[in-house]
Amino acid sequence: MKPMNEQHLAIFRRHMVEVVDVHFDLAEEELGKSSLDQRVREAMLRVPRHLFVPAQLAGIAYHDGPLPIGFDKTISQPFIGALMLDLLGTRPGDKVLEVGTGLGYQAALLAELGARVWTVEIVEEFASEAGMRLLALGYANVTVRIGDGSRGWSDHGPFDRILVTAAAPEPPDPLLDQLAPGGRLVAPLGGKDVQQLSVVDKGSEGEVDIREVLPVRFTQLETMI
View 1 (tube, one colour):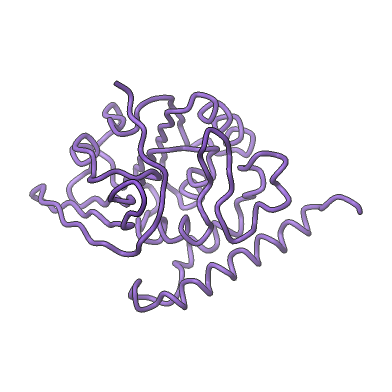
View 2 (cartoon, helix red, strand yellow):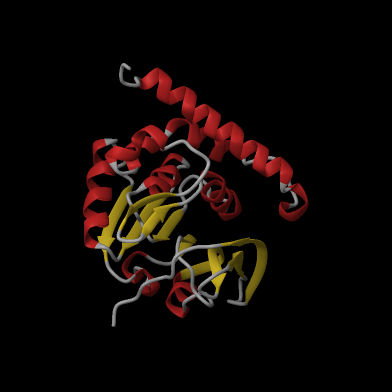
């Protein structure tokens, strides 16, 4: 069998996005909407997800499910990743902090949405790989750092949006402190086995409102002592 080419991969990518569309339609009651934000949809059609998974998994990068990327971590199911970006509501020019870079896929999508992205990854190997992949694809508006994402990146705050791709019982205080008034944080909040994908909005006076959206299951947010 001959190897897949870019045309084949584009077809798989389009199919992946169509499956995400189905998920949104089926979850309309929980989400309050039946379709994915069009800008997120277009970004997912552009970003080559197969370049953000281990090379041996490139052929199944567009399947509707999470994939292992090493160190007991995964790249999220496309629907969940898309939903998080949809809920985040990133606008062109937004300053965005991502906690949990992985191999860089969500950061690439945020960059496609026009954000200036700072992303923190606690696993050194992931941070290095993500940086190389993002640079090779021309995402100059993404900066990767090795570190404890729960502490944020105060040098570049406050942030308009914060995306957390690992679970915590509640939003870490440093992240709330670095979220700009009127800003939004999206994260899985809860215990070890199951969490609620949650939207955290910060008011103009610093008040915080948390809205639960959907049950999810993420690995725990790792911190440095």
